Image (tube, rainbow, N blue to C red; front, side):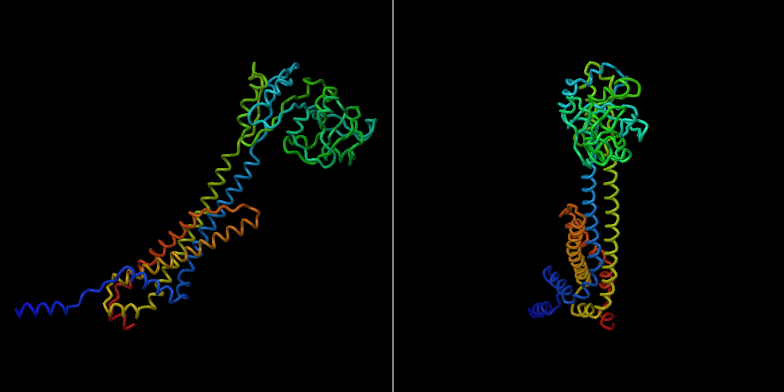
Length: 410
């Protein structure tokens, strides 16, 4: 009986192993981080920069990709030219019913006829010996003129009235008008000895750059100039404006719509779709920004590791005291790792906010629409926390191996 009582007292007086609850661990880590804000800021500054660079670079990369996509969509091939394989005087594919079939195709904005005459003499007076300028002459109907879309300096386009009335009017490119000394509309110029009234002067075109050094007259009037239409030196075609991205499809369908009985006698020319080039630019931009982001986060991880190692050197006495009052090596290790993970997470949150702000300011300054993905910011916070945790493993393991006596002596 007495022996059992002595054993019970000895058991009651024995030292129980220390325990560290999860709440206490989190509280100790938070207290260590918040009690020394200067040291914590110095530790986390690398992560802030890395996370900010990660979010900003990906945000700006996505924004640039969006701008590239928008620019390519605006400038994607919107033009098709249909030409005959062999010149035909009858040209049934240029009749009004054929053009109506063509304009009914889904994706066609406008389509019209054009005839290109060989270089014609242009001059200001009826005497062709004075001030002659040689320039190609384009005969277009109003729809083809819309496809070319000259940018007017002064004057206006000719319309269906001038086309039906075969009115002798002309639109001059700025280059030809300057050579002729024409600076306003309403004056007369002579083309192949016939008088024409200048109805407009243009300085640029949306399509068909050959019109930049030419004179444009109504399609019906072009039949009376130079060689007969279909003769040597003249070329006839149909100009088609399409919606962005529809040029390739319309290029395959246009010959069948214009000449269903013999579509192989017509050749459609459509510029290649730049979608492949756009994807290459987007992929290169994304790879570049990802590489920069990874390097920035790696620098942040190294910064946390170095700062944590230096911080532990200054906390040797604290670590020794904790070990002396019963803290286990695992407790020291877990607390330090949790501290670096918390610092990494806080740095990630701060850096993500700075990255979003940087992306927004840069986009607004350049007139872009910022593209910001919330998941990128969340990924930056998670990666920063993981980086902090990994950066603290080695310093925490070293600190956990310190003996209490050695730590208290330093």
